[in-house]
Each structure stands twice: as C-alpha cells, then as structure tokens.
Amino acid sequence: MKTLLLLLVYPLAQLVLSQPTYYLIADRVFDGERLHEKWAVVVSGKRILAVGPQASTPPPPGATRIYYPNTTLGPGLIEGHAHLFLYPYNITDWDTQVLKETDAYRTVRATVHAKNTLLAGFTTVRDLGTEGAGYADVALKRAIQENIVPGPRMLVAGRAIVSTGSYGPKGYDSDMKIMMGAEEADGHALVQVTRDQIGKGADFIKVYADYRWGLRGEDQPSFTLDELKLINEVTRSSGRVMVCHAKSKEAMRRAILAGAETIEHGDYVDDEIAALMKQYNVVYFPTLGAVESLQQYRGWKKGITPEPAVVTQKKKAFAAALKAGVSIGMGGDVGVYAHGNNVLEMELMVEYGMTPVEVWRAATRGNAKAFHLENEVGLLAAGLQADVLIVEGNPAETISDLRKVKCVMKDGELVRQEK
Ligand SMILES: [Zn+2]
Image (cartoon, rainbow, N blue to C red):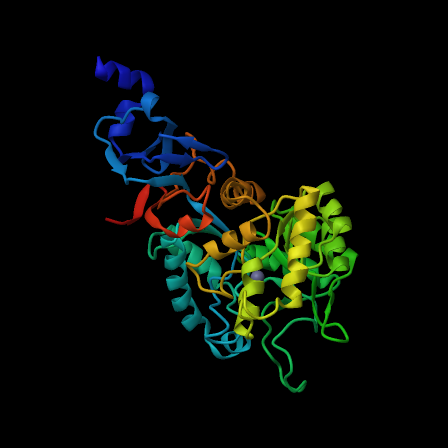
C-alpha cells in the first residue's frame, strides 16, 4: 500500500532511485514567494522533484533525510551585484588592486571569494566586472561549472565599458599609459567593443553611464543618450541585456530611455526617476552595503558619529523607489566589503524600510526574474535547480538569521552541512 502511494506521488519513482535523492524538511519553508509551515522539499539529482506540505509530500524510497531543529529552509540566495575580483578597500585600496596586482594573483583570490560566497548560501551571483582583470571572470565561471573549484553559478560582465577619460585609476602623469578598470570606447567604436566583449564571454554588458568626473569631482554622465542606445541595440541583438552604473539623475534618465534593464547604485533616485524606472520596468540595485562600508572605512562610526551625507541621500533614494513601487534588487557591490558577508545588504534593506520577507523575496525570486533565471533558480518548485539554504531561526522575522547557515545545497549537491 505504501509503495502504491509513493508511486502515485512520484510517478517517476524508478527514475528517482537511480540518482541521489534528498528529503529536506524544516519547521518553516520560504519558497521564494511565501512562508509555509512544515513543508518538505524533495530533491532528485540536480533538480527539485516536489515541494509541499510534509503530510502530502512523503519521502521517496531511499531518500536521505535532512532535518535540523528550529530552522527555516529557502532557495539558494542570489547576489545581484558582486565583484569577485575585488576585496575590501580597507585592506587594499582599489587603485592598488587594479594597478599592482596581477590577473593571476587576483584570480587565485577570486576562487576563495567564490567559495566564501557559496558557503554563505549564495548559490548564484551576478558579477559586475573584473575591474582590470580582463576576462578572468569568464574563466572562473567555467572552472566552477566544471567543478574544479567550489563557487556559485555566475553571470559575468567581463571588462565592462567606460567612456574615454571618465574612469580610474586617476591622478597619474598624463604622459603615462595607465591601465583602466574597464574598457574605454566611444561613438561608433562602441559597436565593435560591445561585440568583442560578448565574443569573449560577457553574459550581459555593463556600462558606466556616469562617473565622478565632473568639474568638482561630482557624478556626471559619461555617454550620450545615442551612445547608450547604440550599445543597447548591439547588446540586445545578441540576446543579451545592457545594465548601467548610474548615480546622477541625468545618467539614470539616459540609461533607462536607452533600454538598460537594471540601474546600479542610483544614488539620486527621486520621484521623477522612480516613476520612469517603474514605467520602463527597470530594476534598481541600490548597493547600500558598499556605500555604508566605504563611509566606515573613512571613519564613520555608525550610530555614534553623524550620518554622512551620502548615506542620508541613499536613504532618500531608497524611500523614493519604494514609494513608487519600483522593483528593488538585492546586490550590495560586495567586494567593497568581504565576500561571504553578502547578507549585509539584506540587513540594510530592512533597515532602510523593506520588510524581511520583501528583502528575502528580492534576493531569491526577485533577482531570478531580474536576471531572466526564473525558470532555473530563486524558487522552490518542481523542475527548478536544487539550490537550497537552511538556516537556524526565522529570517522572515529577523533577516540576520540568514547568517546562521546550517546547510547549503547547489545543483542537488550538499556543499555545506553543519553538525
Ligand atoms: Zn560595482
């Protein structure tokens, strides 16, 4: 009778038995959208076989049972804005990392960053550029896919594009040829550079729509609207998307009108820009973690010394986006702070006004949709990749509980299992 029931629930039971099968249960299961009590997740091979209430989702025969008391289970988290080839600027400043560290050295470090990210429960990462390490991200992504080093599945930008003269490192004798943190191109040459980056492995094209090269060092647009449109057209025709670094209002406006899918940083989002983002379905990645970390490296003692103006401005921008109903993505610009500390961004998103469940959704289902991965990851549902994170406590109430990692599974493989 029991076998008959199992065959009804799992018509592919024969198939199931031929691959490693797991029966994961927890007191609470967050499926990427909502929280459920006493659910179970069945994993077979690399995919999720079934998700539902424990009562109607029995363990398949021979499945390995995984249960930790007082835990919550959710989809593997998705970091939306990482730089695996950078590490905290209070250890080594950005100029030094870009100019004095070889690509080989930076790649060795990046493998450790990738591992730390995965062990923290982040099974997918969008990496926004190597900042001077060429296409080492394409190589790292391949090595992870081939199981040579542990790490999250990656979407990579490669070198990224900046306009001539706008980007850093800056301040050197103009007679010297200084290597830039991204590839310079302008005007019609953007067609060739965009195609070259795609050919070398970029999954999307990252463009710096502005940079701090104004007369007083303020953020000013670096590309014209037509240039951005050209990059977008070339990128789109390859089936990829353009995303833009943009802090100033004018750069955000141009990026949105040119077809950028995501806006990175967006320091000066106001009601007008938020409405435009909403109208064009643009996802906003506010990168709060980087802003707060940088200020702390410069001496800010959070909660003790006065709040720096950039932090106050960021809170205003975040509030404007939230009020307008803009999709807010989870991506902290991690690399500015330590890889593996990715939850910092989620904690700040709660501090800045979102609920823990909204933030958790942003880091799973939300980011999956933003990156067109919604049929692969970010949701616990039959047929999707088996990426699972189990933590002690309940992140739906206390987001920091996401730091209390008990178990991480990626593609159906247990990559971390605490006692
Ligand atoms: Zn970045």
